Length: 319
Length: 194
Image 1 (cartoon, each protein chain N blue to C red):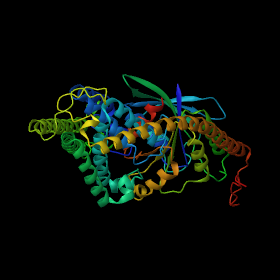
Image 2 (spheres, each protein chain N blue to C red):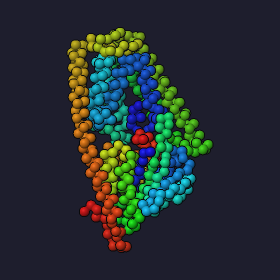
Image 3 (cartoon, each protein chain N blue to C red):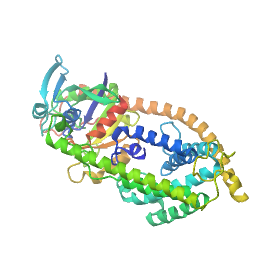
Image 4 (spheres, each protein chain N blue to C red):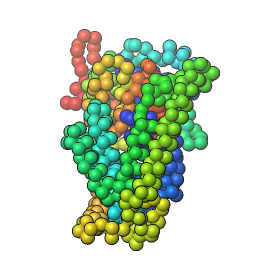
């Protein structure tokens, strides 16, 4: 889903335009297996994904930070504040590492990147620190998410395109006409897709096995069955979602942070609505002014007489 | 049917981009409707190779009137048709030919009614006055994209970040009409706005 959102500058998602459908399918499977972790990790990824450009306007008309606040609030309501905190910190660590990895490419393509602000080394150190806190809150989920992220990034890393069009076989038309080049490019692309799917499958299985082992050897407390803090069932092998497992000061801190985020989200919604109306009116005014300028240029071209040969006259349409 | 217009300075590759986009979308022939200001519109059918030979030239202002062709863009489980109009190159100077000036005026007027505007530029050349006028209008429209062509030539890739900053919030599509790369981006952009 992240690769699909990043087009056109990024490498193609392996499933092309169907990536959104496959992403939804995987999310549905994850939610079926482990509802609380799936919801909190997805909403955390959503929230953290907008951190590199927090003031960028999203398709909803709201700034990125407002949508992040809403996502975190929803996650806290559905999965519990501790589960949410662990997921947010885990995804933040993954995002920082990803940004540190892509620093040069993002700089060349003028794309937002958190590591640009702090530097590659500090971003990696920050990721390690944040991941440490996430692991303290929920070791099993942090470990499983880390293994899964490494496997997914390996499986989806951009391989040399099969054809010339950034992943779309250049011989597409040739293949349609029965040409050899298009068929060969198609076979290479299919091989790449199989490799990536296999890498994802191995990563998923490894992550699940790691989580099971951590629980089996009781490296963390037994999970609460149906926590009052969150509306979703814990699911097998999930981490603690109840504030009661934390020291009192940490529990109050997490609760306060979530309440603050909820207030910020509501305020952001109201501000975004009002700003949207104001900006729509401004945009219409700018469009009308620009169109009038173009119309005047067209009128001048229609009424102009061409310069004589060698006169060197130019269009003084701006004067 | 919605209209997409391909606009830009002379010799930036507008016509070649239009023809190669048709080929990329699976067409082997194109039916081009020529719409001169004086005189009736007429239609010619070309194969892709013939269209390239006849309509594309190294000299500027080969295209002297609006030229439209219908493309089928796959969307979901069906296709959407769009009229893609290739135009005369726009320049800041007064062209000595009145036919070219009239064609430029028609081009500028057609910007207002197009739903999709593909503004083709050569990243190595600074944006001209008329480029900036179109960019200012395009930045207020949903269906506007700056198409950075000739990305296969040296020096263009380095200028891309600067172009992205200048065009923001409009998207920039990096293509090479000659090498037929980046056309997937153009197709995706068309699909989103049809």
